[in-house]
Image (cartoon, rainbow, N blue to C red; front, side):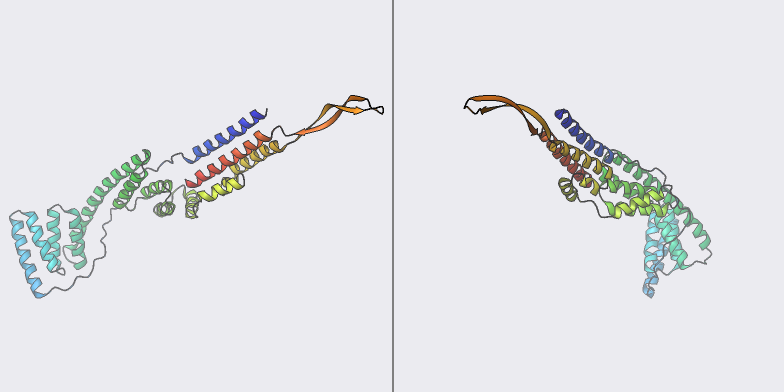
Length: 337
């Protein structure tokens, strides 16, 4: 019976540790979605350019004339290079800025053309060409953002594949690339937060989840995610402290790692094992005694005496010790994760 009791206690300890590991290690599913594409043309604030000298203005006109000649000849790349130098020499000239923007667009440099149109609109917001430039700018930005969206989607897919394949570093890099291309994509922030939380980068994961909530104010899991963020912002668990507490007081490691049910089960199990080990069994035993009668003749007689022993001491104390040790190690492993 005592051997069976010991095996039961050890089996519970091993199964408990296995169950704890299984509850901690399941892979959390990622969110899916497409990156948003902004359709409104907006220009970044443009710095005020320094006033050019008379010599710079003259040289700028020369470059502009050569650029026009190259354009007539059909050499778009050369025309763009000449106009770029002209616009750099005289950054206050709206006509040069407009010509340079058209040259960039003709050469197929959409991002550079968009920046050049922004520069022209800043210099001459009420010019006759301003309305046309704003329309061209909107189309260029839409095309550029659509291309960025496709690249962001590709990077996001690489991140999902890396995460599924158990490569968190690659997944983090891929999601970061997607965010760089689509900074308003809340789902990418969420998934990167999941990856970083799994890597133990708690503060960065909390920041990503907060950014997701800012971009997705109507997220259905907002309350649960807010609680999760608060947990991530708390001080991380100490594996050494979890192990030490578990070794000193059975189940204390589980209480420290915020698993009170497991801690209570460990404490009860250890208490039962200790109670068994310390339990005393008392019985009456018949023994023969030898005595001498008044005439000096020896004789024997049978009497009864009380005998006590501890039949469960070794298995009970062993089971209590093993259960405490397994529980402490389980708390240490959980804290490490």
